[in-house]
Length: 354
Image (cartoon, rainbow, N blue to C red; front, side, top):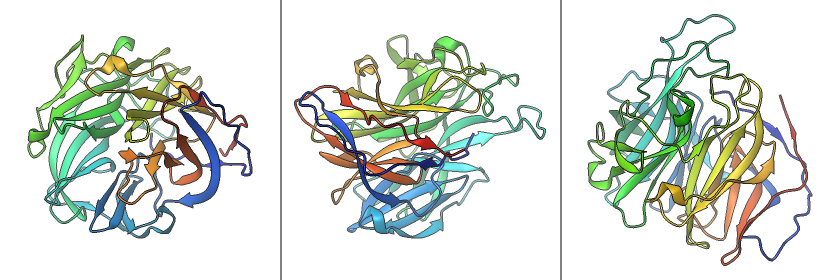
């Protein structure tokens, strides 16, 4: 699935401020990640330096302070694994400097391959680094789909699986929460789902991640069932898929809430970017607390991401202002307003490059 859609963005658009809106999107001077970002781009800080991972089948780690001047894009490697390709989608830096990461990997040997069909099944794995994220040790898969691949799928990329996700630690440091896309199984399980792992299990995560299913957290991360937060309207095996996917979640200090950015694919093969949506929740513990997604941008590109602009801010934590990325490119800022409600979308529709 990993093919980045680039976005041609018209600048100089004026955003109207409405007093009731808690979030608005405004044009800003362009900022670009150094690497191709064909996934979410996780960020951590160490000794006053910001580190960002951009992935297009192999993660590149860049460093700097300001988002507009990141440099030294170098590959990072798995020391004990031949997993390939892989996309680093989420990270967490512990107080002792250990960097934990979670990756999207695509398995291609389930379905016949030819020039027109290169269909994979994504899985989610965990890694750990003791050298500030230059190299990683693979800790194994933590989230997988328990259904047989559907090789007759018409979406163009996936025959099932779990992937395109983010991971965030709750404010109490009790659980890591995984917000991920479900591409297989019955339609009632497809969409954006959630799982969690106890903070104390981060060094041995295999078999210790549990999915939310039927109002509980007992479903196994490996092959267990899910109850989506946002279920598909038309399942992924259809050529007319209508589904939210690719959640990117951060805690917003200005709002005192969690914010989820989402892609919406509709209604043709190949993941057409119909729009970017946003949802809010006061807590991660209750998956039903997420608000109904509201449109932030019509059209757009893949992998929407909010990145805080203050020192110490990441893709997991931001204040009243954040850069808004789609893939590698940021041409907008997000402005959050405490005590207000709703979303003010950008009224102009950018043209998409094919």
